[in-house]
Image (cartoon, rainbow, N blue to C red):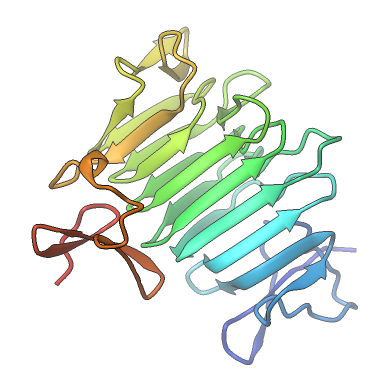
Length: 266
């Protein structure tokens, strides 16, 4: 039986989405009841969810709105099948977390061909696997644009990569990324952003496999959008200059307000 991924929109109506992706085990077939995953804390397919998740078929946009998903069973948390175009729109702080300690579970996995996935929006996204890849980029193009993401593993140094040869392409555009490792990819493109940590880290090509070389450092890779000020100089725990407005981080600097990417807010 063909599987159908069902998402409940933020409105009262329910969308039945014949789309080639899944999120944290939300697989049901056409005979089952729709799970309302925007109504609060629920458990479906061994995943616990708070916040809201919705999908708009016309624009192929998956919206995560302060969504926190804890996944306990086997299989990738978020599997993108071949020939899928998808935009993941972020509102507020979002998390996909696997706490399965027994199995090797990927977070976001793109393993076919032709996938075009873009993560964007004024919010943020953390993907945390337990001991495998938070982002297994086997094929396609993953674009992180105008947003903030953190991809890490609980007990290992896996980040964005592929464990069976050379994987897909990674594009980072005017975005903030934190991850322990980026390796075994067919291309890495950085636009309007820079690697700020570790010192001296750089994008290199080793016989067709692209990676970010940390030159022996054990620290995270930090990529930062080109900001109009040095965000590292701001004391983020200081509530005086950090605010959350409509689910977005707002930073106050010299009497002006900026979003997390450094764009001045009017």
